[in-house]
Image (tube, rainbow, N blue to C red; front, side, top):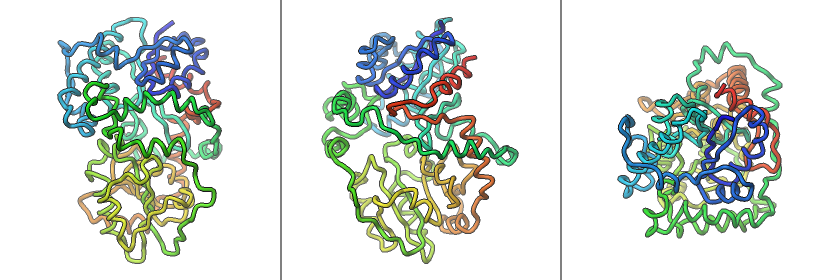
Length: 434
C-alpha cells in the first residue's frame, strides 16, 4: 500500500474521504489524515483512522531551519501576516517548521504525496519545497461552484490549471449539454449535521482555535486563526446555530435596471491575495458607486457568513441614493435580472456564467477568460458600460463550463449526508498519482 496524506480542516473533510477509503485501498492507496482542527482529530479517533494532528506534530517534530530552504518565506506567509501582522515573526518560523516537517514525511519511498486544502495558507504552501526535493505530487482542493469539489495539481482559485487555457483553446472545445445539465443540477441534499446539535458541539474547539481571545493568540496555533477575536464573533456564531431564516422575508422590488455586486468575506484568501486592484471591499464598493452608469442602481448583497459585520464605513457607503442592500431576494433571481454581475473573483461569478447576464471581475480568478476583466488603466464606468453592451456569447460560456466541469469538478459536497460521486473522486485523485 502506498501512503497518501489527506489534509482535513474539520470532521466534515475527514468524513468525505473516509467514505471513499475502501475505494482508495482497492487501488493500493492508504490514507493518512493531516488534521488541522480538533473535530477532525476526534472523528479519526472515533473511527480508528490513521491521522496526525498537524499543528501539534509540527511543533513537536519540525525544526526551524532547512539546509536547502529555497522559498520566499515572507511572500508565502503573506495571507497570515495580513490577518495578524503582530505575529509576522511567528508565521515565518512556522512556515519553516511546516516545511521541515514535510521534509520528514516526504522522505519515504512509500509516500505518494499529499492532497492539501487551498494553496496559499502556510500549512499548504510550505509543502512545495519538500515535494520538489523528493519528487512527490501535491494536489489541492476546495469547494467549487454549483455544489462541486475542485481537485487540481496546480492550485485552486486563480492558480487552477484551467486558468491557463487560452481563449482559442476554449473556442476549440466542444459543448456537452449532458455535462452542463449535470453541472447545473440542483443536488442540494440534507447535510450530515442537520438536526444534530452534537455535531455543532463538536466544533466548539475548532471555533476557539479560529477566533481565540486576544491574549491567547500567539499560544493557540496562530496559523489556524481568522484574525477576528472571540468577542467579535460571538453574535455570528450564535446566529449560525439558533437563527432560522424567515419564512416570508420582505423582498426588495427592483423597478430600475441594476448592477449586482455580491460580496465576499473580507478575510478570505481571494480578497487578501487575489485582489491586486483594490485593498478592501470598501474600496471596491466606493469605486463602483462612483462608476454607476446613468439610469442604473447598484444592488449589494452581503455574504451569508458575514452579514452585518462589514464595519461602519461600509454601511455608510450604502447610504448613496443609487445603492440598495438586498439580502432577501433569491440570489439566482438577482443574477438573472441584473444587467451586469460584478464580483471580485467569487464562486458567484462563475455560477453567473450559466445565465446570459454579463459578468465583470475586479480581481484575479480561474475564469478570467470567460468574463469582462477590470483593467485599472482605464475608466471603470466605461468598462461597466462595455460589459453590459457587449456580452460574451452563450456558446463560448457553454464551452468553458463544459471544459471546467468535465476536467476539474466533482459533483459532490463534503458536508452532504450522502455522497454521489465517490468513484469519480478516487479516479480523479488516483490519476494524479498514476
